[in-house]
Length: 563
Length: 70
Image (cartoon, rainbow over all chains, first blue to last red; front, side, top):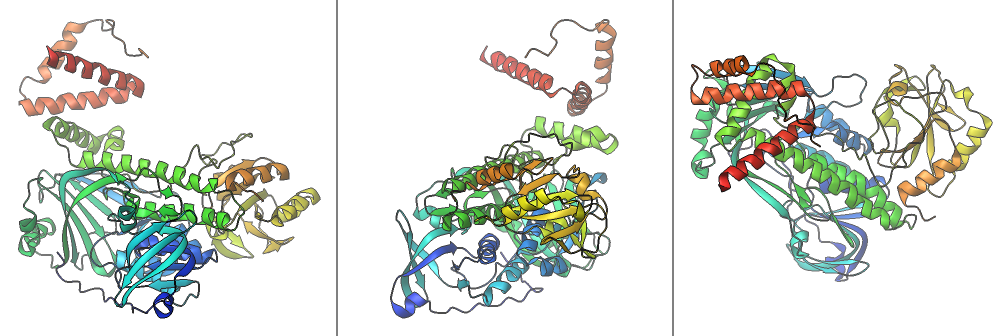
């Protein structure tokens, strides 16, 4: 039930008759995406990044309005950085790292999600979903590889062995096109999933949550995540406050299970509720009201022949922890490089099964965390309420109790401790990082310019060779690295050096100066240490010394390479 | 398994039981539940061995199930 969105002006994207409608012929495309939400748009940007043409259809002709996804995590920002779209997001978004937890009248404790320095991106930004979508659409509009089709609705699917035929309706009629690969990013009510008759198992939580956006100029609330258990303004239930761009604040309030939905969303009642929370002297305007009962579901498999499911179409969780959209971006990041290698005939289709394995594993982790959080936030029995009261009371004074408090386990990059793509360590490393982990970030300079390690790593197989100084590179190492860079599926290596140097490159390889020693520390590097990263930047293997045969074997394994 | 001690280990159970009982002297039913829960969390953190705690949880669940059947 939207009240009135005053802070955002949306554009209606034009419907243009497609090639198919003009010619009456069935078009053939390598990849079609259904759904131009945050995840579908990220997939389109990633395909363009990899030089693959993409058709994206959406039944609507504008960004998603209202209060939906708001928190975008560090890993999402790293992905957006690789895709070249992160700048406007971070410029417009509200950066935060700190969360506070309150119980009744008092603060229980606070936590910092990014307590260490030296990362390109914060733990989170808060940004309204419509801005995020706008910034993802912008680079696609004049992009010859991307064909955005607004007001194009999927009506039917014919699944063939080596392609999918889509029937699409538009304001002018219907047409058909064939896709070698179809990416379903069409949300929780996925049409693709329904047309394919695939189920979406899980459950719906009983608790109701009132989602409101208000506009207010208020310096008293810092840009932090504030969560209340049993606050005086919503006794017996919970509340969550987040700042977004344009002085829009998001307030989530838990309601009684038997709350009347229409009554709860009545703007006057909502206003009273929020006034109790903010106090009588804080002026605010209502911008959005909606009411949800959250779901917890996933498909059995995210890969079905020619069709991939990503984001909410594949899995849906309660919002505590911001694991919805963020996990969708990671689905995309995991999928596109694999699809590219298979499309180019360089990898076995078996590689696509690892998308299914890794991302269903991630979905299970997200389901576990969000279900556990939701149960903690909305205890059902009086015994459960008692347990929660006891631990909240103890947490105010005793640090041991705080890890039990669960107001949402906030989204991070998935770690795959037993990824089918990793090569187990044969050497000893003393850092937290391991094969199956996303890359650790660190500040570096390149030719005297400040940058970050994650910003220098691209979207292809990449090696990191740690040396004291570039000149330490031996003739043998150089020959190995040149051979690796000339493979059909190349491995380009970055030199991460401990000593300052003005060199941008050495023997054709970028030189990253580890200005604060954090890269060496976080990767537990010694001179000669070599890390192999997958195209999604995840670590797949590492050694204390460079051995070309081992690197090639690890890459073959990580890419299921057949060339 | 069987890390959870079920043989007697407390040297002087009477004063200990008495201290526990006294703790509940002036408490409402609800307060008593909270006090017990606080004790529970303090002690499980002290024990620190999650396997032992899970074993105890299993034991009381089975115990409850069988007492419901009777």
